[in-house]
Length: 430
Image 1 (cartoon, rainbow, N blue to C red):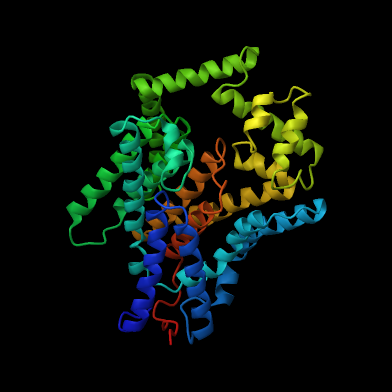
Image 2 (cartoon, rainbow, N blue to C red):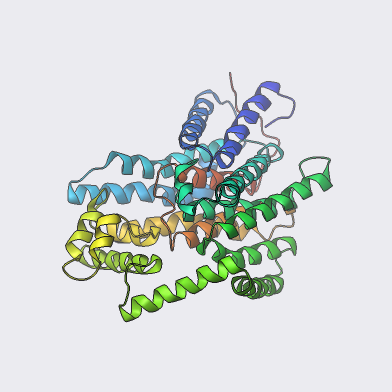
């Protein structure tokens, strides 16, 4: 949008503020993400109704992003198909998946914002990372409470989801070292490095194992970003990250103990001596999810509480133990949840929302413009981390996580979008 139009700049500044507040408040409050998402949707409708000329039209967006539009519509289509088949409708499930589709007009809105303004979303990433790290450090290090207490603060995420989001926010903050948005270059860099280190420390004391598995792929993304897509350096970074991660798991007492507990859990599950361990419970749930898919491969067993009901039916078959059937109602895996509850179409939908935007980001990382490369790499990191986290945790358990993921995807796509007409007039706001 034009720099010389005060009203348009105020309008755009408000939009950027709303986007930045999403990651900033992602772990601090329960209702903020929903409120901010619907405000952004309202802004997009206002812009659509009052615009005169825009930087990117709906026709251009359809031409460039038809695959993304289809991918973000697929979760809703999947839910509708399964609900119609089973004649079982869940309003909360419908609102959750509908948010993927409703992100499309929000994305169109963000395409109208100048890049130099929209890049200020980095401050939301930094604030969100610091707030999440601070909460973990206070709860577990200063107050000396168990990691389970994390479910009682902020957004009430469980310890695994909480640590996952903190890890992602910290890694994303480090990647924004490729952006300089103030004239205080050194201070900006120090803040970002401190934030990343604080997040690593918080995740370490959270005793969460799965959060660390994203380090190798993120190292690959970061090194290829700052070495202008030299794949050989990315491979070196990936291998080095694997070695360092292995050393950390061996040397650090907390992570080493948690790793060895995981190994014992798997051994106990294999020999049948103890099935209800931390990993043993997950393995039972994954096995049950695959059985449900085999029973209903096309449309799954249905949403809502159907997964929990099926678990109770699996107890006499010795697929799960009575304790698992009584205490758990989902498989701790987004891919298996979609596969078991919504069948092939549901599994295709969850894959699409991760891998379709990742494809766009991957293609854009070869540009010589570092600002665009950083935006594309941030988006790619977001997709990859969520996909990896989803292997051992239900990242979309609640609907409040959806807009944090989708709006950030939209923001990074907008920031990496090739501008064909940078002098276009701003949309009317009057």
